[in-house]
Length: 233
Image 1 (cartoon, rainbow, N blue to C red):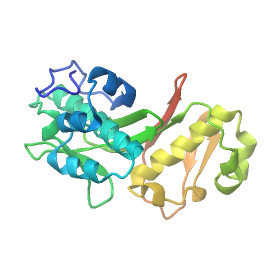
Image 2 (image 1 turned 135 degrees about the horizontal axis):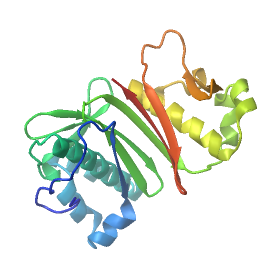
Image 3 (image 1 turned 180 degrees about the vertical axis):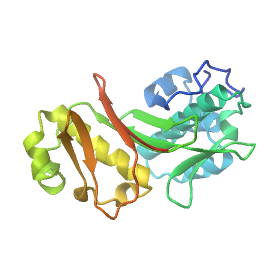
Image 4 (image 1 turned 135 degrees about the vertical axis):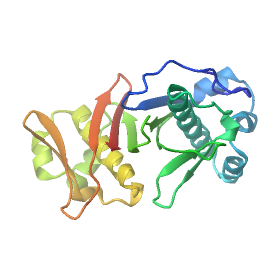
């Protein structure tokens, strides 16, 4: 799929029954593919509304995150549209913004709205979308990231007894973050009120009784990154 061109991307084969589409973008690869300034790249990826946000970002890091995150979200949405046989608009004709519930969504020129979630880790940005437009959440961290400073404040004592390694702690943390994004609260969620506990050969996310958001959560790791996704259907 073309990711930074001006023409609509070509269709990709994708099973329309797929659970979800996850797109990963490395900002360094963007710069290498199109050796121009970030502003020039942004003009080929972002909608007019997003360009205003890009211009108002005060740091280079924030501009890079915004650009990479929007690109990942749009690629995921285009894959979903491709699977459904719907028209594939240009990247600049798609716009990502937060809805009334605080969750990001991608709006196409035909006004069709696609639920998405975006996360960042260093030079990487990831995004998720589903063929059935489910509510989603995603988080990513460097694989095996040490989280000692969080153990006492956020990890339940039972969790601490079950922790097997830094990778295990990182995986449990990304699960928390994915759930927070699923709820739409993101950084405002009280992650100290939830816990990931192993029982019956599975890892369960326990939440306060008053919480109404439920879903399927899964986590996986590569050599460099740990992902967690949450989907509510």
